[in-house]
Length: 192
Image (cartoon, rainbow, N blue to C red; front, top):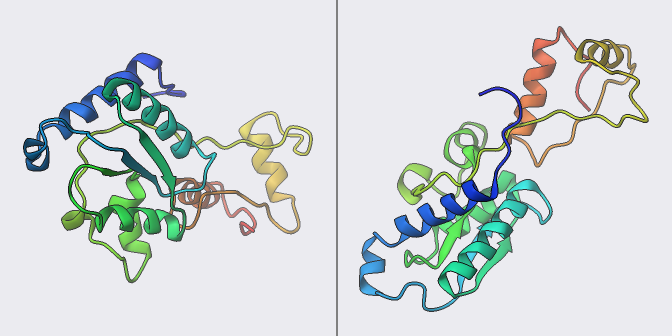
């Protein structure tokens, strides 16, 4: 895959349909032939306004339109997303709590956090890939004179106090991408 991958309305609706189709298979769905018959919680383990939150709000709207029940987005941020995903892992397995897990919750956090509140392999199941989200580095055009990646690297290396990056938290892919970028660019000053 090259370049930016955007999500079309069609692919989002297809993903929503795949999620709904999967959700109809588990044993809890067989006990309730009319799932959902009351509101469904979609837990986003990050603050409101981020990419995961926005994507799940669009998904919630589409699922609500398609299934006739409210799909309520609940932001439960903290601990690199572990607060929200732990709530999903410990919820009643009845199909009424769905989490917006990322690669960090399944494969990164367990290597970075000594005491995980859940075991991703035992406590979670990933029924569907809802979206793919690339990490993109951006800078403020009015503050950084660089127009190319090489110019940016030279500018960053010349900064006496290093540079700062923003990310959703330690161990998230934007954070790790920044650390990897610093490591591959030949000893950038420490990331602040």
